[in-house]
Length: 120
Image (cartoon, rainbow, N blue to C red; front, top):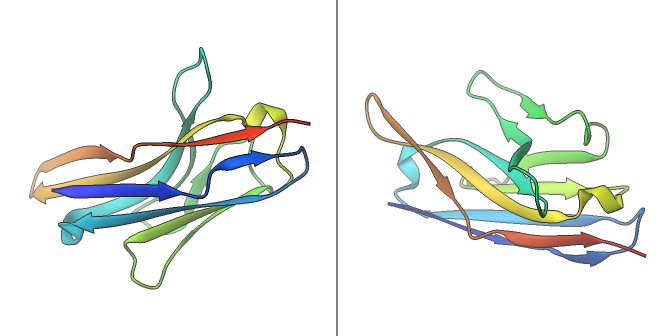
């Protein structure tokens, strides 16, 4: 079992910054790619940024150049630095991890979500 715990959400004015953190616990040896998704009211959950197994990271076009995903030293922590925030970034942000408990088996583990509100 893997548990993901997010923190760092909140309210900020347009142009401001926030840093989200996600810490994994439990069977962290089975973790693979980690990343961030978001879901705005009335919209589908979408990828924000994620690490990929071949190296590097994927970003949604809407956040490129503004958001940066990074890992902690322990590799079971992932951060999302969000700069130059816009009202359209308002959403619940979810940490995601691909978990491989056994060879050939993979599933998505989600955190509980943290609210980010960008408003003047």
